[in-house]
Amino acid sequence: MNGIKEIVGAIEARQPKPVYFLMGEEPYYIDRISDHIAQNLLSEEEKGFNQMVLYGKDTSVDEIVGSAKRYPMMSDFQVLIVKEAQHLSRTIEQLESYVLNPQPTTVLVICYKYKKLDKRKKLYKAVQRNGELFESKKLYENQVSEWIRRTLKGKGYRIEPKAAMLLVEFLGTDLSRINNELDKLTLIVPSTEEINSTHIEEHIGFSKEFNNFELKKAIGERNIAKATQIIDYFANNPKENPFVVTVTMLNTFFSQLLRYHGLKDHSPKSVASALSINPYFVSEFTIAARNYPMKSVSQLISGLRDLDLKGKGVGGTLQQRDLLKELLSQFV
Image (tube, rainbow, N blue to C red; front, side, top):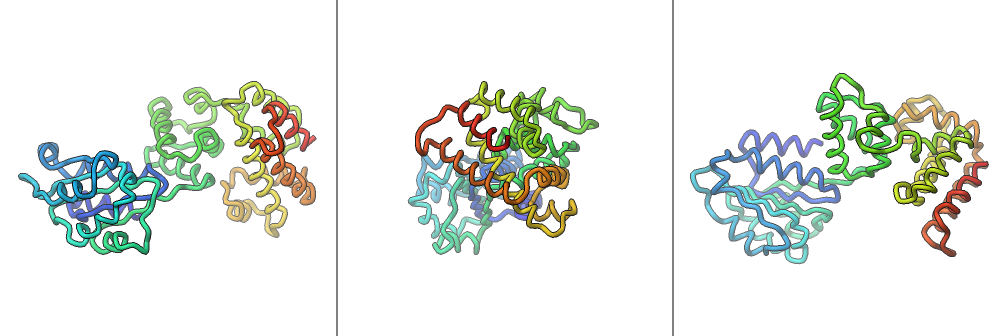
């Protein structure tokens, strides 16, 4: 991300902005940027007198401003980091007067997680004028596997697309959680090996055979025997395999398959671009399209949406085992 590179470059050149306002739905990059500033702008000797961390729950805008107006001791800068600043959302606009006239020797870092400043308000415009405004946007699920690949590449590792998808399926889109698991894998797997689904199963604890990824593939191939095995495993392990995740994944797959049917160009490159998927997975849609004509795909999507409502308790409560049986019957 270009914004991160610019911030890192300015810190390394010791040319920081007086205010960094880090906001948005994805906390991973907010933590990474604030940690980089904390670790790299001041020397270890300077940090003792010139680096302070405040927490939004335990402070006020007045206290932040008072601390920011202090002068550094035997250093060019002082660093003031305000973590969990979203707890100050009701009063955060009061920071505007300071941002309009910031202390030039203070680097104020505001970590405003899960929220965003209103672009129409004065503080937003003041930070744009005198500081650095960084929005950390949540990645969509179809973007996370590529993020995993790039992150591992930066560490000198490779990962097969299927393994990356497994991580996304079981860990979701929480980049901090995923990064912790990637760190674990890079400690165990030699950099000369490509990280695969076996590594994921052995070192992170997910089944490489009984998961939503394999269920989707089995259903796409109309391999009912394999799909039944996976459904039985899900029924016996409901906590690790929530129904809502399964039905949502299948709904996404068949919605993409409906789009696949409508494409004029079915070349791997064109399909991957149109469906926002890795080219590695295009063959799954090619096979599924032969097994499920467009009309039946529309009917399946309708049935999956009804099941999704049942899974959420609409119209009565069903046990997960019963929901899974009804799910499987859609494809038999």
